[in-house]
Image (cartoon, rainbow, N blue to C red; front, side, top):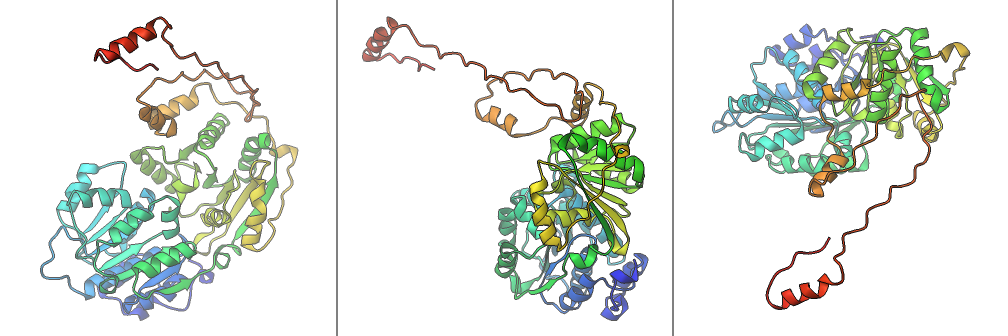
Length: 478
């Protein structure tokens, strides 16, 4: 870490138990980051904390050290059983839960506490067995935790510490009812230590804090104090059909070591990866449709340098701690100004420098004024030269279909709708012709005529009424 990113507060002055200090030293920590320096003294003294901070600021270490300190200095109740966790950490995404668990294993290696990680998409029986074997610190996503809770695999009556990470994203993803369900089944707020962290302390997040915490102290670390000085930002005004050639041209020109490319839709992520692969780049998609085992493998490959380009959606990448990302590309401008800060915060972490490149096309340029107002300055505009718009090789036909088969079936609203309509067969999609350009025009097509419903001949209708009068049931029409 650079000195610019740290404070004068050292961990050695926090009077942490020796097992935790061993973890701190092994992690190479000496000076606190701003969020650590402001939240740790309060939390170590037993004060509830609601902190505004994003990933990459050291907040995970802050709440883990406070959590471990509480469990080491305050013994559990004598009547507590092994299936009653003493602390719970709730995260909105599987990847964030995995990262928190990894950090907890490192910082708490000498603490002698049993950690348990649960999340959806994989390992259902194994996670269940881990819970039944006993747990001190439960880390996971709300859905899977509630699933086990309702099956009485564990209960929450012995909770001494509650941590809610990325609280704003819990609202965005619709988890807040699950969160309230769990919080209401824990001991009262004044009988536990509560810590909440969020990228923004909005009204709804603040309301949640007052509702389920004990007189929380609010700590705010403003986003522009962390990233603006270290991230080189540039904006390209580009037409929709030029975006893929421009990205390829910039990748060839900049030659980044590790790049995150953000898009707004899963379909665009799949399409973009196809074009990148067809033009000599090693890239993969990180989205909610990718099976969990493959997601973890892709993240590992990306973090270890075997995968240089990751194309991701906001939901899939939120909360990930990926070191040494050299470039962030906003292929699609985010429609939320706060998401822009989240995205570019993937690079220039811990005081390092990085590049953030954004494309403003006719589809998403309307978000630009809000973004510039939020970050407090205009984005520098880059010049698009002919060298940055190379002629591309199109993806091979059927490549996307093969990629989707490897991922597994996509559970979308179309499939759910078919099940809700009784499983009626829908007309299969037509085979598409091979694309000649990244964005091809589609001619409007007249809607297909729907067949008329079968109506019984008029001669049959009186007989049906006659049968009904005699007590016979007749089938409904249509």
